[in-house]
Image 1 (cartoon, helix red, strand yellow):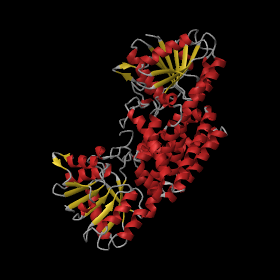
Image 2 (image 1 turned 180 degrees about the vertical axis):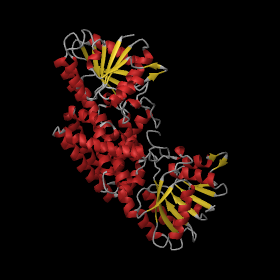
Image 3 (image 1 turned 60 degrees about the vertical axis):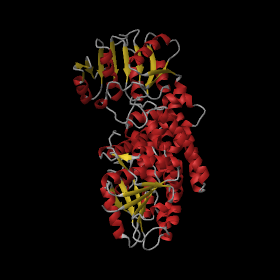
Image 4 (image 1 turned 30 degrees about the vertical axis):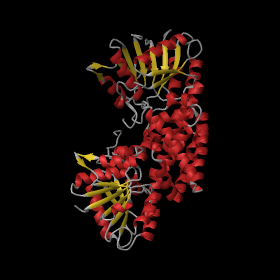
Length: 303
Length: 303
């Protein structure tokens, strides 16, 4: 067992799934769950895995993680930043603190400012989110096969090794990366698609003509917009803490849409077919790689 | 049995799945398959459903549907338009001709021009496409639960009733609609998402940094771009025959993206959260309706 007492702050899909995995992997580990809402606390207290209680204790009070040697912050990013400040005087020397936030620069900067030298903060981002948020969707194995980005502050390599070992124990793929590069890449692969899916949802489902449109909402539309159902508070914080990179990605997307619009406007069949063929080939390449889904299931049309 | 001899022109996902359904529903029906490529002809000739040969005969020659009382055109839209002209002198009086093209105005106009008065053309569009094109993906039940748009030219109500009965026999939901309105609605629910998915694919997967980006391509990106893998020739024709409506939808999408971009640019958390909340609620409404997928499976995360 790498850690003896894990505090999980924020009991949604990610925090709950982490608790389930830890309970399965490390039956003797003490797991303390922290949430604000009574419903989440009650739900967490009742959670069982193979008959065993998942959380050793649950609490509304952040102070309950004082004795933890591992603390994982699983709340929206602005809350993670607030909690780092609130928790920094509480942590015991040697505690490893990490998070699961989807942008990393703001969190790494906050941790560098508030974390005492004897407490080790390592940034984390498992690519295992879903539009199905909340503790009720938590499941063991959520992280299996997922990339888990790890941002290591200077001098924290040893603490990072312990986090990497934990991530590997969960079946995820740890990937050490600079926060700046991380935020640039996920702006394109995750944050841009989220904005686009949200805009498409609000445009198409927002008009007065929903009843007319509804019979024509088929699998393509559903897939394109699935992620728009995700947690608004979580995504507000992601997009605002990665603002500059998201705006760059949106500008690039506008230019790409221009390409398509011009080909269609001009009735330029060869140009349009070239754009479609490129997209077809690139997307097929992903299918053929049978990329792991964020939810841990295998690719190629299976969910 | 409503029809005795069905000619299916174009043996891809839609034509092949139609043949499988017809063979199951009407064991005595003669089914003639027409394709250009040797591989499709050979594959179709070998197709069996519960041990029975699906196609009574296959041919490269359009003339083979001369004795059919039902002809279904399942090729890309420009080919459908060409085939209407080529077939119009061949059809016997009373033949019912229909198609499965995803835009309807161009096809309805072509049919009105070339079809002899004694031949009945009714436009059709089953919302059952997929990114998995080709005869090898054909399956019985593809159309079950799908909307099947039906465009009826003046004076063709009786022929339309026969087509509607067939569509219902396949388990699809016939929906009589004006071609103009159809093209307007699918521009928003299907054609716009296709352009957006294609643009997103080409932008994100097109750079020199694919190896860096790849670990961060999770379920959200995959779902958003799945339809970009669909047939380029089919989509070239769809987008160009519905050009005006697709361009209107793209303009509206740009304005919607502007909303999001401005909220992010301004760091306007309440505005951004409001946009995200609206999208969340609208997309959840679709989930809760457990809308049928285009591929016939049930909604809410199941595929």
